Structures are given as structure tokens and as C-alpha cells.
Length: 318
Ligand SMILES: Nc1nc2c(c(=O)[nH]1)N[C@H]1C(S)=C(S)[C@@H](COP(=O)(O)O)O[C@H]1N2
Ligand SMILES: [Mo]
Image: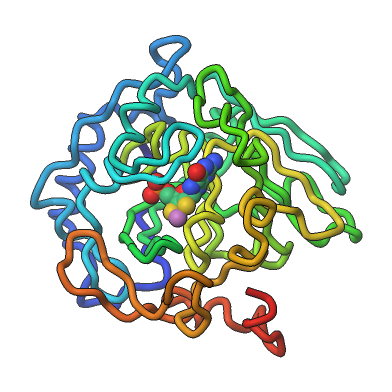
């Protein structure tokens, strides 16, 4: 999979991956089947893409976020997942989602826009430069990972459809396919999964449409072929398997807000000072570490995003 390595936020110069290491990683990526700037999505016809080989140990161990913390083990990133459409048991998601068909796939982008469009995933991969972004992912349940995502800024996609002046929010919808997503047969939730962002949040440069991770295309359990990544918000905002994106006038009602409005707000910014009604958010368990570590405001991205919430009471707008 072809992508531009770009650490964001910037990594101090001393920590940049040495060129030799970068080259050996590129060779691995080529060996893994990357070709001509696009992913081989659908290379095997309908159905899921083949599972990629695990990244070469010793190479990926060098990946760190801009705070210097190492990327979480690949096995955990693809083996410990939240994806209620399949199962609520994190260790079982990968197997339950293994045969989920992710190609062909289209995403409809419309609503309050001048130029509504439907994009095939292949179009998104060729039209927008794919970048690697190493981000922290903080789940509201109190665990976290560091994940080297691949994708492109959501802003680039939104600019293509030309939002109208009335558009203030963006609404995202996951595919509805109860035949192949057994969790969607559960009546506990309002399917399909829906999430939303304010337009300025959606346009923020940190907000990524992800198509891959660890140098490979996304696997079904991580939301293939297209999922959102909003690193300063709790993980549930990072909606998987997106088929519809609409520009709208008012804040969308998410699946989690509908299910438990007192527990899950629209903003869901990572905030150690605002506990979830049933547990504290002051600390977290980084997957692969023994001790808990303190949770950072906005998951460590305050410098990039806090300005968007100036003057708001973050206990009210939780
Ligand atoms: N459609 C959909 N998207 C989803 C979820 C889900 O159940 N369904 N779970 C969310 C939660 S709670 C988290 S923490 C992240 C987990 O992403 P990962 O499994 O890729 O680490 O996905 C989010 N996106
Ligand atoms: Mo989560």
C-alpha cells in the first residue's frame, strides 16, 4: 500500500525513523502486495481481501507517536476490537468479521452540499494522497492503543462535495447488513451505527478517513474498507464501515446517544476531568503495559483542537 510517511503532530527530528529502516519497511510493503499507488482491494473478486502478513518485527517496533510512545503490537490492534455489529466480545471480533465482504464498496456523500457524489473506495485511494498518521486511540472503557493509521484528511473529501453555508454538522452512517452483521439483529441498539461531528471538527487536519493501518489495507475488524479516526475523542466516535456521509444543519443523534443519553454525549472529547457516570476517566490502561497511565486532556491533542471549544463548558457539552 502506497502512502507518505508523515508524523502528525510532528515528531522531534532526533526521533525520525532512519532512512535505512524506512527503506527496509518499504521493501516489506512492496512484498506485501502494494502496487502502483493503490491497494489491491477486491483483487480476489467479491468478498474480503486476504489477510496481510504481520509486519516484520523489529521494523515496526521503531514506530512511535509524537510523545515517544511505541505503537501497540499489531496482534492487539487487529485482535482486540470493539465492533458491536459482530460481537461485544473484543477478542472474538476478528473471527466474527473475517468473512465480511468489503469490496465492492461505495460511500455516498451528500446532504447540504453543492456537489453530492458517490465514491468507490478505489476512487478515494487514487484521488487522495494516503498518509501514515500515528495516533493514540482512547476507548471510553478506559484502555488505549497507539495505531499507525493510513488514510487521508476528511477535509479533502468534504471540499470535493462543496458544503453549503447551512451545513453545520457531518453525519456518518455504517452499512446496514444484518444478514452478515449478526449484532445488528439485536434490538438493544438503533441500527445502523451513526456518528457525528461539528463541521469545524470534521475539517480539522487531525480528522482522518482511514483506509489502512500498519502499512496494510484495513481488515474487517478495524472497519474496512473505510472508517473515521478522530484521535482526540473517545474511540466510539471513530465509526467503522462507512457507507454514507451527510452534511446536515443540526447535531446528529448517534447510536450511543440514543442508547444512553446520560452516558454518551455528542462531543465525547477525551477528558480526564469529566467521569463517565459509571467509571472515572482520569487514567487508562495502554494495551501492552502493566500500570495505568494518566489520561491527557483531548487525548494529548489539546494544542491542535482545544481552540475549537473555547468558552464551552465541557461538563455540559460532554
Ligand atoms: N460501526 C461501528 N464503529 C465503531 C464501533 C462499533 O461497534 N461499530 N466501536 C467503536 C469503539 S467503542 C471503538 S473503541 C473503536 C475501536 O476501533 P478498533 O477496533 O479499530 O481499535 O471503534 C469504534 N467504531
Ligand atoms: Mo470504545
